[in-house]
Each structure stands twice: as structure tokens, then as C-alpha cells.
Length: 197
Image (cartoon, rainbow, N blue to C red; front, side, top):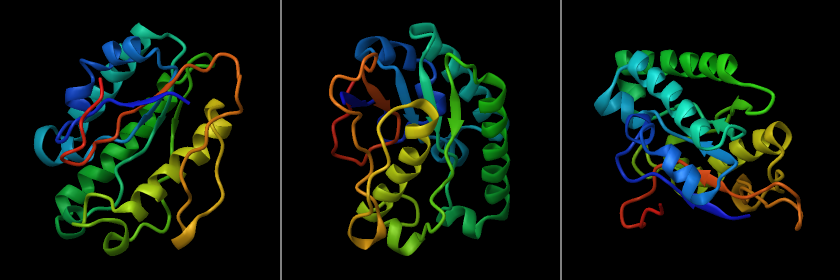
């Protein structure tokens, strides 16, 4: 399954909304797996403005590919939300606005789904600093996408669990499946990992 990462360190919905159309065109993507929001709420925009950028992102992606499918992962538990009640409330509010946007904007030809965050997310095990995921956390995030992408948008399939309880993440559809071109993963990447456009 051809795939590309289309997000850089410190970038969120605010930064991706204006450029996602170009990325979709360049990679001929028909499926977007999007895990953004925490950086927006932490540094750039409140929940309302972040939700507005979600809607702009969807519109820009569809301008490049009207039948694009999207799976959106809400903001997951993080150390700042644990210690900052206002920020925790903003994360919760944004997640509600994200779910509303997905429900309102989803169409039969261009479905939008919100993935359920990993139920057993553990900050000590699944992050290396209370925010950014370890290998274990990355596996759980991948599993959250796989659980929804396979039945919901017909891409890939859930895979069996690996060591440590986390799944290997994402498996491609069978060879020769018609209509599949590629997936763009709009999750932030770690420093030092080159961004792909």
C-alpha cells in the first residue's frame, strides 16, 4: 500500500489545512489517516478555531479528490491535560466538535470516521514524555486507525496482536485490489525523521 507522511514536527490542523490539497494531488491519495489537534490546542488555537480548521482541511482535501476517505483520531490523554483542568476541558470540547464535524461532513462517497482512542492508553508506557508516543504507543495508535479504516473505509485490515499487547498496526489490502492508490498519514513525526511531501 503506497503511503506518505504529510506533517512535520510542530504542525497541526492549522498548518495542514492549507496544504493538504496539494499533498492529496501529489500522492494521489484516496485515504487520509489524521491524528492532529494536540499541538493546535497547546500552542496555536482554541477548540473552536481548531474545529474550523478541521472543516477547512476536509474541504481542501476534497477539492483535490472528491471521493477521499478520512479516519480522524481525537486528541488522546496527555500529561498537560492531566495537570491543567482548562486544557483538559479544551481537549474534551475539541473532541466533541471533531465528532460533530465528521458526522455533518461525511457523505457516502467521501466518508469521515472518528476513531476510538486506545482504551488502555498509559502515559508511562505509551509515551516517552507524557505526550509523544513510544513504539508501544505508536502500535496502539495504529490499531485505533486499523479498527476503523478496515470496516469503515475499506482500507487495510486489522492485524493480530504482537508482543506487549500492541498490534503491528496496519496491513495492506490484498494485492490487485482495484481503486486503491495510496494513504496519507497526517500524524506528526518525531524530530529527525524527514517529512515526505
